[in-house]
Structure formats: C-alpha cells, structure tokens
Amino acid sequence: MTIRIKTLSRLHLGFMDLNGNLGRRFGSIGVSLSDPYTEISVKKHSHLVIHNANDRLEKRISTYVNIFSKHYKTDPNVAIEVHKAIPQHKGLGSGSQTALAVSNALADLFGCETTIKELSKIMGRGQRSNIGLQSFVKGGFIIDSGKKLDHKGNPSLDPPETLFRFDFPDEWKFVIVVPEKKQGLTSEQEKKAIGKLKPSKEISGKICRLVMMQLLPSFMSRDIEKFGNAISELDHQTGLFFKPVQGGIYCEKLSYGLSDHLLASGAYGVGQSSWGPTIYGLTLREEAELVVDKMKRYLKQNKIEGNVMITSVCNKGAEIVRVDETNTTSTKKARGSILEINRSSNVKIAGNRSSALCI
Image 1: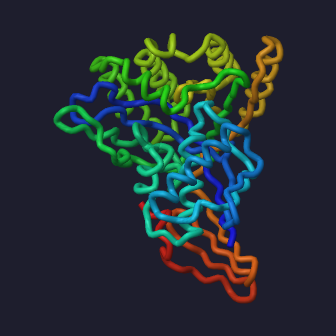
Image 2: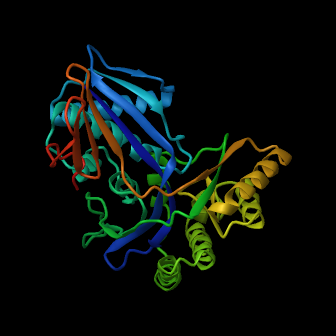
C-alpha cells in the first residue's frame, strides 16, 4: 500500500488582533495557493528512508515520523519519497504542510483513528495561525479567530477556530516573488521574536476596522481595487507591529523595491507573506503575465536572484490517493471524504472510514 498526498502552500496576509486584551490574540488572514505545493508518497519499509529531500527537509520529515510513531505506537520504518516540496522558510507555510502531509499519510497507512486538529497539535503546528490547517482541509480565503487565552494570558493548545472561509474568485490571481538567498524565520525563531513584541491596541483597532469595513465588503462585492488597497494596508499595519523584530515593515531592504515595483507594474495590492521573504501582488488573470514580465526584468536589472510566478488560490484542500499495487485498488480522499476506485468495477463513494481528514 502506498499513500500519496498533495498539499497546498499559503499566503499569510496579516493578523487582526495583536493586543489580546479581549481574550484572543492574533486572528490570521490568508489564502491557500495551488502552486507551489508539496507532494509525497509513503509506504511501509524495512527501515526509515527519505528520498529526494535536502538535508534540512530530510531532518524535518524524520522528526515528524518519529513524533507520530511514538504517539500512536506505530512502526517508524517507512519509505517516503518527496516528489515536490514548498520552498522552506520563505513565508509559504512549508512547515505546517510538511507536518500535515506526513502525519496524515502515516495515519492513513496505519489506519489510526485521529483528526486534523489532533495531528496538528501533536506535530506542534497551528500555534498562532489556523491558515495552514484550513488550507489543508478546504483551501480558499480564510480568517481565523486567533488563539484563545486563559485568565493569565496563556494561549490554548488548540488551533484557532475558523471564522470565515470563502472560495476565492477564479479571475483574481497572485504574482509571487520569492528571493533566492534570503530566508524567513524558523518556528523557534518566530516564537522568540513574537515573545519580544509588546501588545498594540492602536494597531489592532485599525486592522479590525479595516477588515470589517473594507477588506471583507470589497471581497464580497468582488471589488479588486478596494480589496487590493485593503491587503496593502493590512500588510503595512502588520509590518508596523513586527518592525521591532524584523527591522522594518519588511524583513529585508530589497522587499521595499519589490513591492513598489509590483504596484507600478499593475498589482492592485501587495504585501509580505508571514516573515517573508516572499512578496505577493494581487492581479487580474488577464494582467498577470504582464506583471510577471515586468518583475522578471526588475530582478534582472537589479541583480536579484529569485523566482517570479503566477499562482491561483486553490478552493479545495489536500488530495490523498491510496494505491494498492496487489489488487489495483486506489482510494482518493479529499476534504474529509473517501472515494474508492476499483479499476475492475464502477466508482463508489464511501464515508469517512479513516478520520485523518476530519476536523
């Protein structure tokens, strides 16, 4: 039996409440992306082996396998092949997607009764944001509730709840610029950095008003200009909060030029995803190629190494395919349901026989 799973990257657009005096903190806003993505296959083996992964990714996957096997008392000896991987530490959510891909594949392979929330908690994901988790489950445009705080201000171990989840318009695209050399923070570095920040009621108030009075209304009315203005301002306000630990609105100097040139090239709104260094611009489908061409020329003229690409928001979650080589039966699971496909018979739909993709 081989389990093959494909997961999505994401853009983290910002936080709503950076203060926390109302009993919750953060409150993330983001979208899931169809590309780049992570795709792996997992099967039982005589020993743990990981193919086509660099040293850092191999170490990360090995850690997730060991965490899973210790918690669920399963055999850690599996063969994992990495077919494609989201770039690491670029602000695209590679850590969460790798953790969820590995743990869900193992849960399916060994028939473990579990849930996405449980796996996320065990793997140490969703500590501040629910965007990666919901991208895995349903994709789309997502806003979460932020982490619940107890009376002492300590955050809950459970991931935030999803407040809003909408399909993103097909005609709206993102152009993303991923600088090659610069890397964002690791999870541990992120935790330490956030611990140094002081709550800001002023910035939180501005962002919450922006989200409720401009970002969401313009999204619902499909007004790309006002929505673009809203995500640019959301990014600016979030950057002001993180300025003391990242050195500015953005994580590095070249990001200012990238965002300015994206706007000059026709993007309706721009920002830095998470801790960066990925910079994104919102465009219409018919204008995206022109924006990409202009950004590629800008990178070449300024001798900046990096990748520029058009990507879409993916309005569905991870795809899991189970392939049994002995009886030519495969099982496809997406968004909590299982499709059993037997090549010698008709397709039939089964229920949640494995609950790995259940919330």
